Image (cartoon, rainbow, N blue to C red; front, side, top):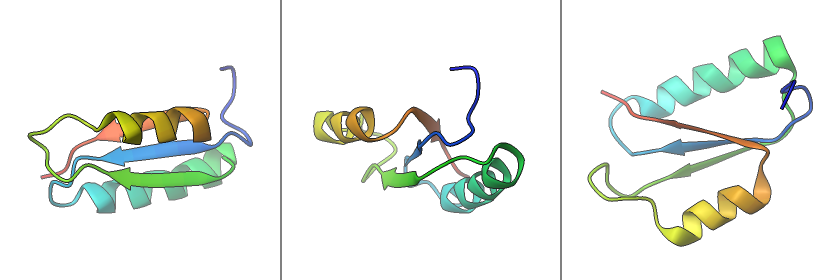
Length: 72
């Protein structure tokens, strides 16, 4: 992908503290600097478990790129 402009971006948070704050700031920055399109925020129920196949499938079918991150 050569640009993020107009692209939909997914955010997958592992539910650790402050990850939601990080993703909010990151999304604002991407909107301002790269003019991204829609966004989709999803989270795992626990940082110690892998993401469910259904969650991965939803992201894969809904967005152009996914940012995965942790908090703390």
